Amino acid sequence: MSPTKPPILQIEDVRLTFRTREGAIRALNGASLTIHEGEAVGLVGESGSGKSTLARAVLGLNPERSSRIEAGRILMAGRDVTWLSQGEWEGERGHPVAMVFQDPLSFLNPIMRIGRQIAESIERHTPQRRVAERVGELLELVKLPSSLARAYPHELSGGMRQRALLAVALACEPRLLVADEPTTALDVTTQAEILALLRDLRERLGMAMLLITHDLGIVASACERLYVIYAGRVLEWGRTQNVFAAPAHPYTVGLFHAARADRDAKGRFATIGGEPPDLGEPAQGCPFAPRCPKAMTECVRSMPDATVLDQGESHAVRCWLYPQPGDAASASGRVVGG
Ligand code: ATP
Ligand code: SF4
Image (cartoon, rainbow, N blue to C red):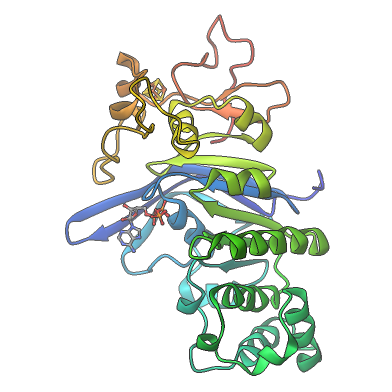
C-alpha cells in the first residue's frame, strides 16, 4: 500500500435502486468501502444485504435499464467511474478491475475452448503479447495443465472451471480482483485449494482483492480487513483481527454467534431473529433496529455516525451503543467514512 497512490477502489456513500414491478428496491443505502493497492478486503453479510449489488456496481454490471445509482460515487484508482455507460464499461472491464463469480459456467462461453477464451481476454487488453505462450503461462499460474486449453467448460470439474475463470480474469492483469462467493459452490477440499490459489496469486501479482462471502471463516483466512454490510449499509469495518477479537455491532455479534453455531441458554443454535429488512421502505434510523436485542428509542429515529474504536483507526462501527462524535464521554468518537 503506497501512501502517495489513491486507493485502488473507493466507494463513497453509494445509493442504488432497482426498479421492479412491485416497486423500488433500495439495495444500497449509503454504502462506503475503500481498498488500497495490494490489500485483501472481505465483504460479509446475510443474503440480500447488498454484497453482490455493491460488487457489480464496481464493474458497471447492474442492469442499466432497471437499476440506478441515485447518489454517491465510485472511484477506481482515483478516477470517477460512477456514471460510465455500458458502452464505456466494455472498454474498462478487466483492467484495472476484474471479477470472478460463484458460478463460472454463467460467465464462461459453453461453446468456446478454454484456451480461446483466455486468448480473447489477452487480445482485448494486452494485444502485444505472444498470445499462445501467455495462455500457457496463465494456465500454469492457476495450476491447470496446458492441455486444458483445448477443453470446453462442461468438460471441467467445478474447481477447474473456477481456475479457468480466474485465468480469463488474470489475462487482463487486474490490479483488483472482485471475487463474489468464488468457493460457495465447491466441496470443502476444492474450496481450500481455490482459497490457497487466491492467496498465492495475490502474493505473486501484488493484486488487491474484494472477497464477497457469507462465510466468516473464509474472511479470517484470506482478508486483512473486512466490512459488514446490512440492508445496503456498512455497519462495521476494520482489521480482520480487531473485528474478530471484539465484534462491536450487535449485527456482527449475531453473525459471529450464528457462524460459530453458539447455543443459547435453552441449548438452541443461535440465529439472528426477526425478518430481513424491507428494502422498499428503508429505515430512517438504524436498519437493524427491528431485530436488535439492544435497540433503544433513538435507534429508530436516526442513523448514528461512525465511531472509531481504536487509536489506529482500524476498527469502526455505526451504532448508538458507542459514543458519538462530539459526546463529552467520547474519547475517540469521530466521524469517518462508512
Ligand atoms: P446473496 O448472498 O443472496 O447473493 P447479496 O447480499 O449479494 O445476497 P444482493 O444480490 O446484492 O444481495 O441483493 C440485494 C437486494 O437487491 C435484494 O433484495 C435483491 O433481491 C435485490 N436485487 C438484486 N439484484 C436485483 C435486480 N437485478 N433486480 C431487482 N432486485 C435486485
Ligand atoms: Fe441496535 Fe441501536 Fe445499535 Fe442499531 S443502533 S444496532 S438498533 S443498538
